Length: 160
Length: 160
DNA sequence: GCCTTATTGTGAGTTAGTAATAATAAGTGT
DNA sequence: ACACTTATTATTACTAACTCACAATAAGGC
Image (cartoon, rainbow over all chains, first blue to last red; front, side, top):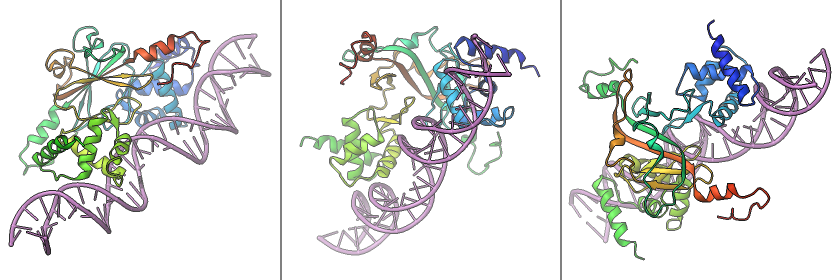
């Protein structure tokens, strides 16, 4: 298997954050890396491929802790459980298809980090902004085509 | 009571959308208008002030339907139930204090609707974007001050 | 290898909803 | 004003996605 270097990199990052290196954490990190934008349940399923005795509660605990450490990023699309990814620190955004739920990464829209300087209303008390989570919601090309098909030639290209 | 005109305006809007004008819907709309950025539970409590027999399930149904009609706007901050507001159609954003949960409205950052044109990665399939939900997360001034107090003069200004 | 304490597992409990159906009442026509 | 049709609401389950308390286990320093 070629996941030795990834393994080591994650282990080093964990130690750097003062965390013990456990197979549960490594399995979760590997699963998130292989399946970006996944909910806890899918991460559990993926991680169990290499660590069958892993429990759901451990996944929740590990995901929460690693998110607090900023080793993982968590975001919550509307009408969806929380999703996780390993791409952190670059202030990128997400586009979600409201029809099929597919998620795409989108680079920060306005250069570096202008998203972090909102225009406050005169009467608002400004906050110190740490992150700007931008969630684009729309319809992906596939779902658009599926909807535009004439009503009497249905359910043929819906497959994947 | 001076909520006659508001009452009538909501009633007209409901009719315009082909919905019947019920006291439940009017109570929910009035409650959301008076308590912007509120979760379903708070809206229920507020609406019951004028309509005690209203049920939680009705509030969920009404909120969902009115949101679909775009008479209400719904957003889901992280670690929070969905919040509702009557300010719709102006593509404004929200800033949430990660410490106390307070929510502020923020006008659209870059003029009119540039938030609606993300920069797609070369290999991504662009979606047709309908809304861009921008969620600024930071720390409000009050929470900031509370945190910066020296550790040995605690819990005095936390009260509201 | 042993020992301390972080980490994980076990099992129950909670929040924020959704779903199915029966009861009610808005608005239309008379 | 009255009846009637059907949207709307109430009632009652039921579920998803977590959270919490505590017992069992195992990392990593000695």
